Image 1 (cartoon, rainbow, N blue to C red):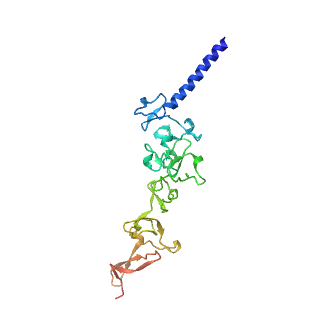
Image 2 (image 1 turned 180 degrees about the vertical axis):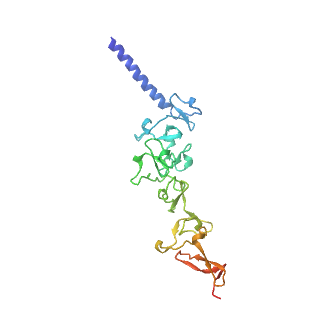
Image 3 (image 1 turned 135 degrees about the vertical axis):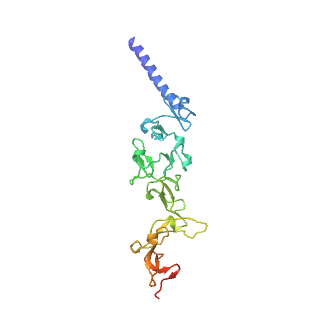
Length: 261
């Protein structure tokens, strides 16, 4: 008799526990403004009820069998990322402070591993689980992911634009290297679309053979593009760097070449 009673009590506990779990999962994705609008154990973020977490293993499984990602909503709170919040093409597709990674997934931005949660590393400006990275430690770019505006840490994190133009990492995001102006490029480089009207996006290209570069013909590097020189009449002129960066030109004063008297 005691065994029968114990079995009935145990069965009711199991059913009750299972029912609580189902109710909790059903309450996730419910609309909210405050935590109190959500079922007990859930938190309100991005106006939707979420399950809090410490790692992705705390989160429900997606249809593909993998756990939902555990992302930072606002430090130190981490939440399970809902399927509806995952895919993106633009940063504006992502809720809160999440940004669209090169793989077309909304992720936390980062400048180093310390900015990411447990079991995540900083890869190309976004937090990701190590198992998702390729042999070079990068996320695989997606066709739907952003090109221009993609998060990055280095120039090499930036895939080419949809037009095949090389992008560079500026301020943590991939941008067109130059816009029709050599001044957008670095030393010993020239914009491939210089002189275009209207200015067109371009790539920064080396002025010439790196082994033959001697100076940089750029106005924003006066110490490289021009040097002072003495004229025979005692005046001071300047020598400009040749367009191919191979050498300095003749000594000139204004537009006139400094000649012997």
